[in-house]
Amino acid sequence: MTTPPEETPRGPVTFPDVVRDVFTRFPVFAREYLGKPRPPSQFIMIWLLGMDAVAGTIELEFAQRGSYLIDNWFYAWGRVMLVGLPAGIVRYWLIGTLFHLIVRLAGGHGSRRLSRHIFLYTALPVVVMDLSIKVVQMLVYGNEYFTGQTSPMFDAVVAGAMLGAYGATLRLAYMAMRELAGADRSRSILLLVSIAVAVFALMLAVV
Figure 1 (cartoon, one colour):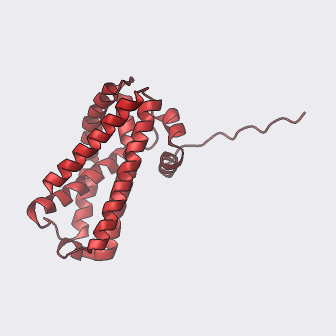
Figure 2: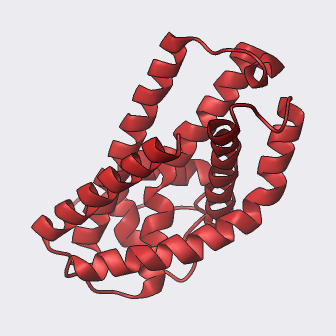
């Protein structure tokens, strides 16, 4: 009788592993790690979450003023990197707690910590896409991005990419709410779609 080969124990989960698993096998990743006190790469995830928020404030300043307060990418990335960590901590605790309320309204259960973890890791598609777009903008336009005009076609591609990322995040959030928190299917969909519409309307109002 042939003895089946033993499974090779998995080593430490690195950040690239987290990115791959969130995008390709999220249900398995979520069940294995999001209920733990400290999921893998939590510090990096929080920092990236804050970097995304700070990058958003730079664009918000342009939307409100019609011009940027900074004029080169060195200062832009310096601001994003330095303020990113404290901004990420605030965003993780504040919006993660609000997300816990959404989970409860959808009939879900679980701790606030679980809800914060779900929010943090399901936000990855948006965070990765937004920061990647910033890198592309830097490579394509250089510092002229802050003083000149961008191509309407390029802007349309960016908008489409971000809509896709938000759709991916909503899908992951729905999966986690259902599988980890036991939330009701209909209420989860209604709440997530309502929040997405509200955020989109707010963005249009600000711009």
